[in-house]
Length: 459
Image (cartoon, rainbow, N blue to C red):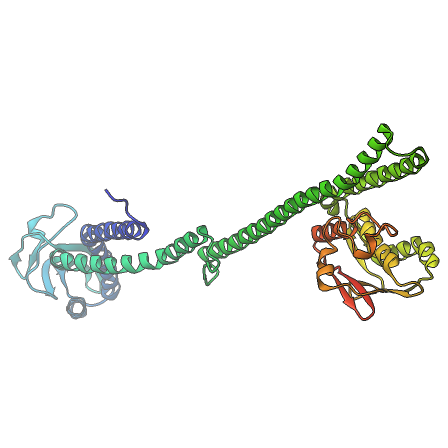
C-alpha cells in the first residue's frame, strides 16, 4: 500500500478527532439534557413555593385565593389551597402527568376533583399561617416538556450531526492545507538545496516556529554554499600550486643540468690530462665557482619549495613601512656604490603576515630595483592607501618579459651574459608564490623611463 503523504495524514487525523468529538458531544446532549432540565425545573419549583408562601403569609382566605389564582396563571403551575378542610385548586395548565421523587398517594393528586395518573408532575407542599389559621399549600409544576424536548432532540440529532460533520470536513481540509503548505514548500526548497541550486531559498514570513525553521535552513544553506565555494577555491589553489611545483621542479632540473654537464667535462679533461697544466688552476677555480653557484641554486630551490606552506604560518601584526625602511637600509651600501638614491614616502600600514615571508618579498622587490636601475638614478618607494609601489629608472621591459619574469629560472637578456651573472632566476617566482598564497594582488608594469612593482595589501 502506498504510504500516505503529509496532507492526507493531517486531514484524516483532524477529521477523525472532530468526528469523534461531534458524536460524543451529541450523545452527551441526548443523555444529559433531560436530567439537567428536570433538575432545573425542581429548583424552580422550590423557588416558586417559597415565593408563594411569603406572599400568602398573613393574608385572609379571599386574599389567599386571589393571590394563588394570579400566581398559578403567571407561572403556569397548579396550586391547591386547603382552607377549613376543603381543597381549592387554581390551575395554570390543563391535563398533567405527575412525576414524583417518592411514591405519592393517589388521593393527594387530585385536580378539580379528578384523579390524575402520576407521570410528569413536580409536587411541592408547605403550610402557611394566614389570618384565618393554618393553610396547606400544594404546588404542581408540569415537566411534560422534558419528554417532548427529549423526543425533539432525538429527531433533530441526525441533522445537527450531519451538519457538524460537514463543517468538520471543510474545516479539516482548510486546516490541513494551512498546516502542510509551508512544510511542503520547505520540502521542495530543501530538495532544490540538496541539488545545490543557487536560487534555492525558503521565503518564510511571520515569527512562528516554521518561519524560524525556514530562516535557519536558509542560513545553513548559505553557510554550506560559502563553505563549498571556499573549498573549491582552496582546491583550485592547491591544484595550481601543485602544477607550479611540477613546473618548478622541471625547470630546476633543466637549469641544473647545463652547469653540471659543463662541470663534468672540465673535471674529465683535468682527470684525463687533456687540459694543459697551465690552464688547470683556472679550470679548477671555475669548477669551484660552478659548484658554489649550483649549491646556491639548490638552496634557493629548497627555500622556494617551502614558500607556499610558510606564507600563511605564524602570522602576526606587522608594520609594512618599518619593514620597508629596514630593507632600504640593508641595500643602502649597494645603492651607494651605483650612486642610486632612495626617495621614500611611507605612510604607516599594518598587516597580518609571516615576518620572514614579508621580509623576503620586500627584499626581492627592492634588490631587483637596485640591481637593474640606471646608474645615478632615483628609486621611489611609496606606501599610500594600503598599496606599496617601488619605481626604478631603467629600460622598460616588454609585455612578454613582464609576464615571464615570474617564471622560475627566467633571466632577462642583460643578466644572461657571462659578464653579468645576476641572481638565480627564482626571486620573482618566490615573490609570486608568497603573494598568491597570502591573497595579495600585485603588478609589474612598465612606466615612463622605468618599471614599477605594485603590491596591494587589501584582502
